[in-house]
Length: 134
Image (cartoon, rainbow, N blue to C red; front, top):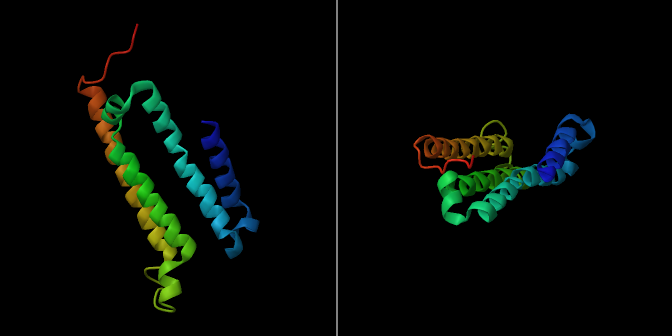
């Protein structure tokens, strides 16, 4: 939880501080946002330690987390390396820019996370979840 809070605070500072808006700091910004995204793994590892693989993947499926991280990683990588603009100069100025592709990838990641959350909701409300000890 501490790593998520620190990464989130750093991401907020970098978003609102003009000194971090320069192209030279783009890899640093991507790294901080990547650390924020990867902080979700800590929660998953915690759940695996406490509940085991079968129970944890029933609660929140591993594919939801994996696809979320995959989409976020692809988006960040495309943004940092400036894929279309670097290879196709002056053809990706308005459409298909790396920044746009990054946002599309993040929306994909959000949809994968939502899909996993719906699965977790169904699991909890279908009576499959073990009842808490009283």
